Image (cartoon, rainbow, N blue to C red; front, top):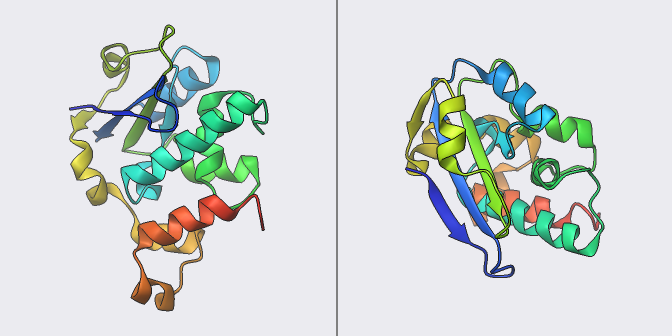
Length: 175
């Protein structure tokens, strides 16, 4: 049920995304991610409108890593930071990272061909039900997404929420 993507701009990288619902151990997962025993970005699925949003953040994080210009210490934290429309790192973690009370988790694994954590290694850590990535929209809190990205009703009339989100992510370094 995990979905793997080969990145067009960085073909040596594969990205695997897993979605879990009814998660009972979010605080333990967050601690494991922070201490490095889980090598992946753990996201709050309520803030993700579409897997493309994650792939944009991953591409940007890898690009910055290869340039040596990351604003955070690890690729996984850079992925979380790149989801944010602002340059506030702690705010990005609060809004997009997994919090102790979350009942869903979106796990993002990056693999550049060297030793990376596989989905088979992650799944046993999660006390919850793995669901298809296609179910993501059922866990998304669109009202929260619109608020965080400051999406107006006029904007929704001319494009999708996803378009607005990706636009905010792309221009945050310019504005």
